[in-house]
Length: 449
Image (cartoon, rainbow, N blue to C red; front, top):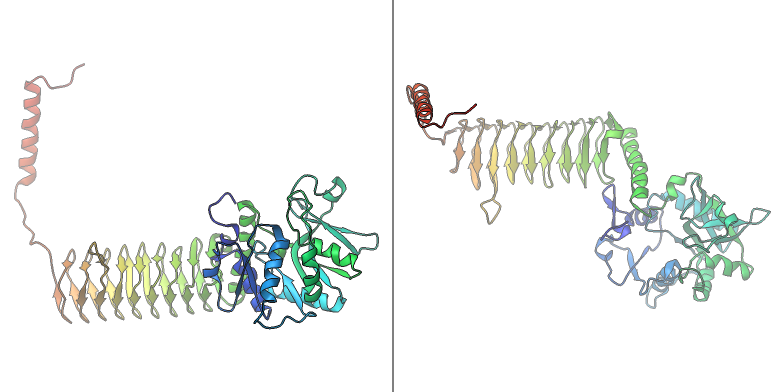
């Protein structure tokens, strides 16, 4: 990845790569989910409740990772692991595997009576993947790694069926094979697919389940592959919303992260980005805007070019218009912030209309303060509300006002210097300029040809 961030921690549509297979396993009904991490335990803080962490003390390959996971599953004091139970192995850099695909693999494994079942797929460009070698009858013989020169022969490199890194093992057979793994290969690592060779040597049956949709098992080895996987994931997210009744006018020009919730009959126009755990109600309209970790109730309207930052709540029918930024604020039902305003750390009442260039000055250089604007308030253009300040229900502010004191309900707050007109100013200015020009000419300061 050429990055200071670990590969499996790179985000895919708002969620770290490794969390996609974790979520799929939980959705598939896994009794226990174990994530294998390095001694730094960088993933520990990201795990959902109930997911266990095993530590791989040395970076000794996928076989070493599986040893750490099995040690966790078989640890004294924990629930006993049934030797006949299926153990499914997923990879943190193969994010798009679905709960359905996991279930199908387990079903094939149980039906086959095999001790190991590997998920494979056929790729037009199999570079970087281990190749699946079959015998003349189609039975799986082995998996050949291709990470280093010499791992595979020229003929094996021509094979397009690849190991996805996803397996179902019978727990007892896997437990017996793992201690016998060997690091005699180009990288000096313990390869998990060697378990298949060991089981076959023991006379056990090995099965393969071909996954027809290669997108489900695509791995991420660099940023190019991450972009390819992101395009697939984004298309799936957009399609899910559209099938649920959301109008996405141009899916190719719309970014919606995986945890976003959108209600029926909401319309998302092109060049909109919706991130985090944003929740949007029914019948809303989002036009060319950027939304992060916010809540929009039914009938809300945003944009074009609106920016809703974390903590923003738009109540039913509220409107945030062009070039408006809202942060950590509650905007009441039917309230309007039509254009060119910044509302931060504020509570805005129902049916209030904030005029163009209304600003909440919420930071005094040391701390953030809240502004409270009541219901039915009308602020004039270019009003600055210096927090902490309160504007009462049905109050008004004059255009250009800097409001530093509370405005009572129903009152008009005006806070600006009285206008003064200087008569004859333009004429005197022109005369002064002419005199200055004549003086420069007399002193020889004019231009020369």
